[in-house]
Length: 399
Image 1: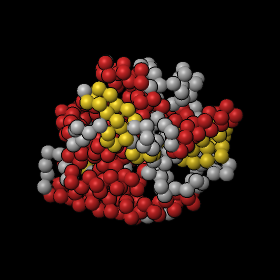
Image 2: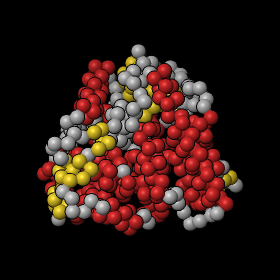
Image 3: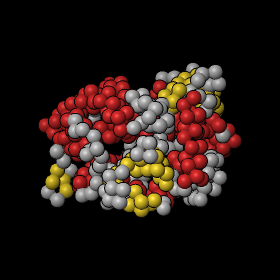
Image 4: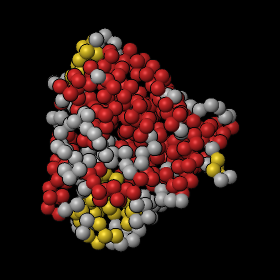
């Protein structure tokens, strides 16, 4: 990585390591009013204790109708018992069997996308594969028109690029960012709600219809509750895979010997992709709110404090990971926290892992060599929000 944004992420890691050495596992940023948890045990505790560390931030910002519609079914921002109800209902429709059954279609889509750049010696791997692959998979899964994928791309760019955030990232800055993305949230909610109502009136075999029909203890999901989960899959679900694919291409390019070994032994790809997830987590931190006074890392954190669980730092905790800054594709065990921990473990992790493995199996079968173009700058998203390439030119040699 040679761009300013990649240095920004590496700078974030360096600052986290410095804070960990100076302050210990928990650092109180008095200016921002937040508490940053930097070690693996501390982050694991924060993520696995929803009674003390709440995911619900709805009371900290002014209520906006657009965001309330999104929050109603978005169980990422919920605590028990609401979280259990929503996740149980959604689990009936989005089962491991459903995900595993997608493999042939994912492989076919990856092949079709690369057919479009066949014969070229250079292409943007984000535009050609990393962005469209997960969007098409999820769109087909939900039964929404694949032709609308430019909409989904635009929504994801607005919501996850971090372009609306300034340097301070304080509550006033966050509120300005929320105001800026509100129109996009409104547009997305309206689109998804129409889609759900259509499937309620005209049931079919897809995931949306299964969500409509899911039942738990005599309860079913309301339309507005389904909106949150569909939005989560459509936006967060695809951006995670996009980030994983781009980050893996960069990592393999920086480690050519390891990449060559993977090419000759593709069965090692899953472990290698887990290592990419460890060193370059798409979402480098997760926020929580304390529900009571908590003692953590030698500090007493007051009630209603904002706690930032630094996944990127925890994933490189030298007390747990040997040579934490080194890419080791066969690292085992690899208890990274990139997909979270506890009740909020990423619901889409199996799909992201499956798409990542298949994408590289197809890439390796088509090209005998893949290299990041040396004369084209790599463009990144805002690393404070998401660690992901925005554009990445590849020089390729046909197999």
